[in-house]
Image 1 (tube, rainbow, N blue to C red):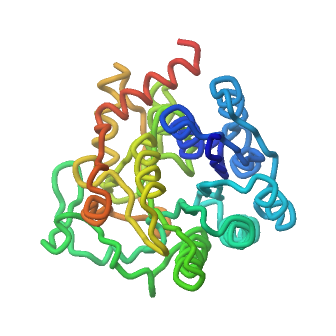
Image 2 (tube, helix red, strand yellow):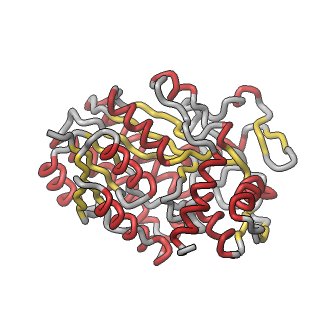
Length: 353
């Protein structure tokens, strides 16, 4: 009998990739939980029903559950009914810009929704590994205190202590997080607590820029996907501060799913991992423009806004050494160049080109 995987946010970028990977590569029966909140948070351009339809058509053992993770009774009933062997929690309000406009919806989704899932898991299937998709925004703007050096097209760390990037020991305290970052801190710490207090097998994956061809990027969320979309449509892309040299590490959704599978195979309790592309898969906005132009053949139209986004990182890339140490069979398999090429091709297909 096939094992059962329950994925929240199953129509999103990471959720859908996890559904596909665990179904096709590992033979799991998939239970997707999604109520298309992205369309509520971001409007029609954030709609993910197309991805839900794709999963229903492409996967033989996929069941969709129209459940809101803020509905405590609904979540408890679902976990009790399905009793999944693995829970992957990717559902979230994902934008720190939007969080300021909808603070209650943000906290209820990110923090309370996570607690609802954790407690339902503890009651229904406490032996099942629980993987929580956290964010590097739990570190707030503290990474901006690291000494930087300005290069021609990017900022980089001047302090050799960070030559590999930001490690999991970096402080999450006493910094400006944005309300989104604060709600994700609450969820992150709660997951750790369920691991340490109740010995629930679980981990927090503090993601950098998670991306891939199935990303529905919008201006307030989805860096590379939205940048490529603007490039192909000839639409103006706005750069917010730091001369466009701010650096992000980018990880393909496939490599996220692969790491989750590694954790599920050998779970730990209350662990934290900085899940990103590392230095090798990092780029600045200016550098991303060049990659997009290379694969689209079109010039990137953009304007510069001098004021940076609140809590934005000037330079951030993940130190992957802990992940590689705990799970040596895992590593980055999709390069930044290949990732951007796939995103360009995917947007072309969606546009009918």
